[in-house]
Amino acid sequence: MFCPECGSMLRPKDKGGKRILQCSCGFTKALGKEDHAELTEKLAKGKKIEVIENVETHPKIKATCGKCGHKIAYYWTQQTRGADEPETRFFKCTECSYTWREYS
Image (tube, rainbow, N blue to C red; front, side, top):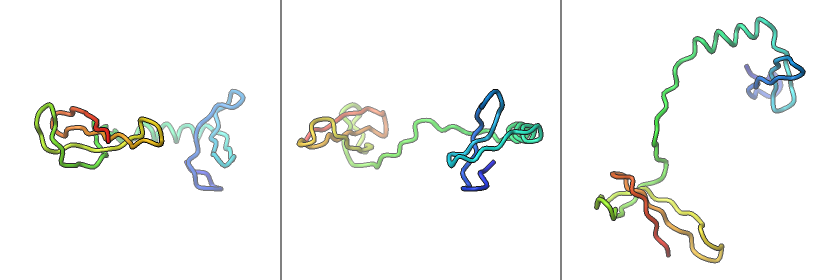
């Protein structure tokens, strides 16, 4: 269910022992028996959600893995030391998932 005022999704909350739907803009709606039955029915009919594990979102780069010798790795940088020092580059092998770092 969505807020009629701003269009955001209404979230269920308990207020004074009653179940209500509340929006981040402040709009609230009391849950009636018909609303509760409708929500329960929608949840019961809901599709299963497929969970994919180990999805990498980092870009790939040519780098040789020190463990298996594979030539492609994921790449990201992170500031691990002081702001006046260069950031640390991290690599993760696409083949064996070995992770290593490189300092500049």
